[in-house]
Length: 507
Image 1: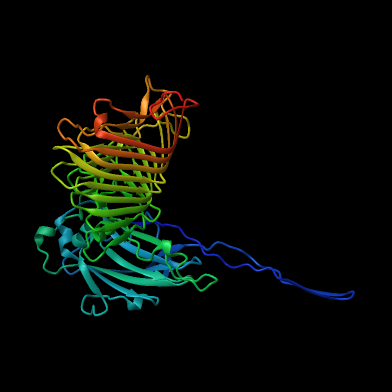
Image 2: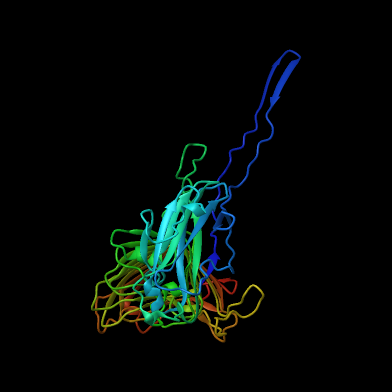
């Protein structure tokens, strides 16, 4: 049984050049003029269609979400059914598409004995072109059993289509002749379930601008990956840069590791370009959100990391090196980003460039002795409120109704840490008016000199502005300040409307 689902990622634009020409020539009192009219400027459109061949009329009709395509209920060994589809581009921009088969439910062993065959064509497929039996499938390619195709979220079809053109495909489902009596009366799913067709499209880098440049729309990225393919490409040793064509929503079953752990691991040597999309860390589960393991060097850029609750959004493990560039972090309070150093490992390195942090606190911690960190914040903006509200003025809660609080934007309350924290060209604002006592924008410990003499934590603020209410700009714990070198240059602190020093004392 099968329900169809069409989804469209509508994005991108192309510019049609407009010219207004007025030319004049004058001699004595004779005049002349030429005016060119009818010039237009219009944004390009991205519009994909998904149609199925009607075998009675031999024509293609739009697929409806609630109209199952494969809806035959009396399968038997040797039975086959073929259907043809059209993916059309009715917009003015070239597009790239992917057609996937996905399961929503627990498959039975019946899926192991139904084979899937596929044929692609750039010309229209008619009823007479379809295979009416399994004797001649020279034009078809077997892509696996239904359990293999659905279980791995495989791509059934993909390609790119120029404006006002179309691609065609034919799919055959065939029950293997050797299926035994054990498969009688079985349904495809345990209990209820469906398998769906999902069509996703994104802009394709094809058109040229007025200067003959075909890379002006390169951000659309013709090789963008969708769904589980993002994970597959990250784990492909032949791919170094993975461009997301859609949100990475860890609530989606395609990212489920079956153990209740909501962790999205970035392997060593990889760059994840979110391409303007979101990574969404769910409120459920016990995982660590977006993570890198020890010894990993990786980059994440150009998108949003969103936390549905106060669980870990980002987990940076000791001995790793991670760069975030042009990333917006949106959290539900303190310690959304956790950086863990370890005295038994190499230094952890973390770079944030052109990032924003909204109620997404960053926490550094150490363990197993003096632990080295090297952290840089460049051109970043931090904002937070002690209690968070939605656009309607209601207290912001996670999906379980819990209210969370932001009490610190950078927290380095660990006396194991040494190395460097550099904060340059950054702005901070933390409003804790609703707190019962003062909070801190930045909280610092030094490295414990009694146990780790000579190991110093160097913290530098340059071109930094801090504003807030009922907060201390930078709190340094006096018990460990002998292990801290704190330097400030061209900084300003305005708290409760007054200019103060970094420690909140009046100037």
